Image (cartoon, rainbow, N blue to C red):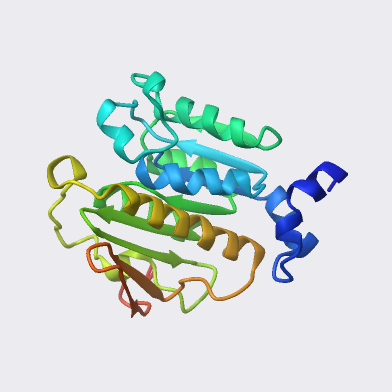
Length: 250
């Protein structure tokens, strides 16, 4: 690190769990943030501010007026612009020394197979089961850690799936790809504005823990946030040996 970086990240360097070695890891790391909406709007800025050296933003959507209630990477003058372009502008204003790449597209298996060999961690900030399953399967295949978050109405959840660890479950261990789940969205159900900020910031925190390697990330655990009662619950989840994605026969 140069003198400017030592000063900029000095509050991290004071933490013995991070220190110079941990900050150096962040400067060399590459995170893929899939979804530049509510969750991504909270997760990506913290990754950028903290000095994560390379961030790729992926989203196929454009900024709409209804997004501005909670998606803080975007502003009124960005309406109609692609979310990844709007997000990149925001992140570069936060930290001009890091590299921000954008992909204006939906996540696909082929695209992720091309990207993940150079990615250190994935943050799933999407809002539907089919995309989450696709991302999870790709991360399992490439042994890439995945931080998965979701938020709807007043309820959020977050977990970390790390296929490098033999005991770690994957997303499909909890939500089987064979099950059919009702797809609901904030467009029809509503969402409490700060909820995506809370869960997205937690996703950033979990990603930093995994990349630096300190503490106990949410591997094998799922955190449930109830915004009505300001209550946090935790459930323990185990790897399913018969999982269709990460089971022994796959």
